[in-house]
Image 1: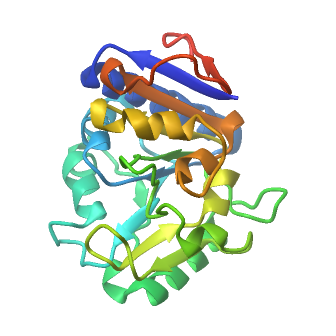
Image 2: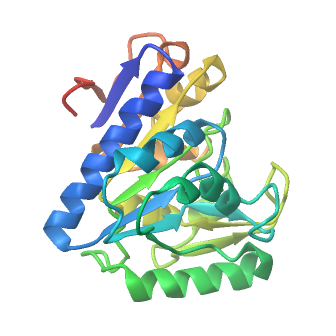
Length: 250
């Protein structure tokens, strides 16, 4: 069952998300000696990244991955890596985490192949034979897309063995991207999805509704999903299939 936490505004969402990420990473590091965190692009996570730089006291043993990337170089204005670097990585005091960048400049196919190899060689495999990331922080588009998995896209039908996929026809520019597969997102120990603003209300409602390829976020594993939203993004009741979480005791 999805855990849903509604907070007053976007700043409260960012603060609560940063605390949850820090707590989850610390648990993972204590239990397994390493914590694997995947981050996303988009505007919503930026403030969370800024707060996370100080919220996580020690970044040793934390490895940073990416949920998706545009097929551009790391210094391009549209690069997810550049956004994460500017909002998080360059503000971390002390030793930085190990960062696994998606090489968007290689193009969709080669970049996806390289990242899949790095993921499978580095992250421990779970019962399903897939790499198990400890935490994936996802944005959600107004259409319900997550990472670069868009509504009704063929990538949603990729087999369970697919780890990373090349996207050639994204409905949002640029058209060429690299994305983690739905199977890898579903295999993660936890997915955290922050969303703010009235423009995300319908997407959140769809994510909490019946599983459908029309809303990729609805295909995530509900029992491993936490959604943090502000009042503006909160769908009208009643909502089935989720748990109203105690936001202070997640």
